[in-house]
Image (cartoon, rainbow, N blue to C red):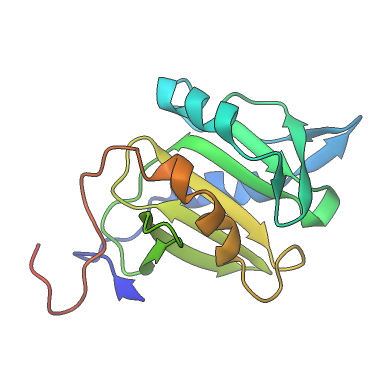
Length: 167
């Protein structure tokens, strides 16, 4: 994994929104997910419309907010939110995931309380994906890899850099 360029702490609001995304409630088959501040971006509509019907064997569920997709139920729910606040430079792990077609996306990766959160780095609009370890105990990155075809077309302004790279 490569660290992102220039360390800067994540905004408390960004962390709070990610934590809120983890508070997934289900009722009557609908998953409650808070929308990102830029969820109305037309690219988010394309991502939601073209998101797969299944993710890691979990069926897609209806959500309550624009720019969101969910798969699974209860504690095993995987959630995608498009239009989240883009992360700035950070010391959190930043890694480039490339699928078998050669499509790659840079992600900031954090894990807390058994949930791995992937947030696109340098893409607009920014997307986050929360994957509970209970849904993907061995490889939560498989969910992010499954979305490479949806995320890769988004405009890129920055990429993950390593210690020897120049900005």
